[in-house]
Image (tube, rainbow, N blue to C red; front, top):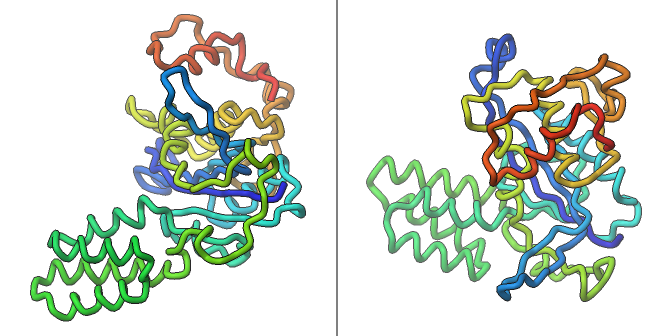
Length: 299
């Protein structure tokens, strides 16, 4: 394997019970994926569908350091990390994503969030258009200088505050502004050139919904931290087919309970009711609920 692409984001989930008292009404679940490229499939109507090749995923309520350590273990369970020549990490600029002291990746600021920040912080359309042109033409230093000039020339305090936020966001993530393929670095071949293509990144938003949001948000769902961690482990394993996935104890340094050992470690597990009112669009959930026991799934 020559390339590894990582993406990360967070999703805020509601808490219940003692964890609600300890952490507040909600807590951010950190979510990360890794893959070695993109495969293009042509559908019957002629459109191109993108598939992330050899995707693995990890999600939990853990601290940033614990999340990174366990995420690395999940990646290592699929890939020989010593053989990776190019490792790229895409994120929205959050501290726990971009500010990893042990990171050996090329960090990239997610294009969607990078461009959206101008829309969020600049109300004057003419100014916004000028800043977008500088951003898209990769004139990053001139972009910062122009934002600073507008800060000194605008009288509205609210607008000044938003421009300062925009300046902070771009300056703190300055080195991550360029795409990895425009930095003049050597980009190795994928594991199967012509079939597996290099990634342009930006797949995290849909994966947040697919992996976590679709099951764990909505319907007034509330979670304990440990319960949320365990369901997140099952969902990540299910949606990636990674049989090496482990459920981690939030208070432990290492994964201690594999999905295949839940039944022997914790009794017979939970037997779901056989009558369900599940939307027809959620076929994956219907398949899970049809099983006699979640603990009998072979991960």
